[in-house]
Amino acid sequence: MEKMDAVAALSALAQDNRLDVFRLLVQAGPQGMPAGAVASALDLPPNTLTFHFDRLRMAGLVTVRREGRSMIYAAQFDRMNALLGFLTENCCGGAPCTPAAQCKPVRRRAKVPA
Image 1: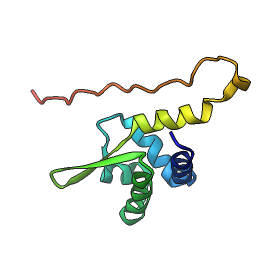
Image 2: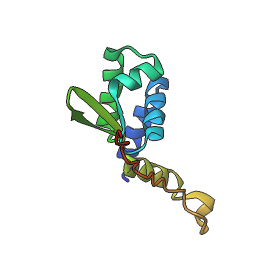
Image 3: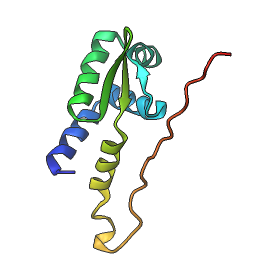
């Protein structure tokens, strides 16, 4: 990750509501969450949430896809891991150390009604 990309990602996360949104999407996993579910979970008005989603998307931290009438937002785990790697690549004073943990979420299978 380049320094300017890291600055953009950190800037997007440096606001309490956006940090809450991103952490909720990380918890949701690669399948993501509908915008309405995020708004309900965090008690944020839709217009405010749209602004926060846009900032996170511009920083490359989330993606969006349409499913019917819903907009589904998902965390970009590769980008998150790249940011963590950038932040920790020079730890331990240059001595070899254990690299930062890589988050590898498992995609959950959709439940099929019986």
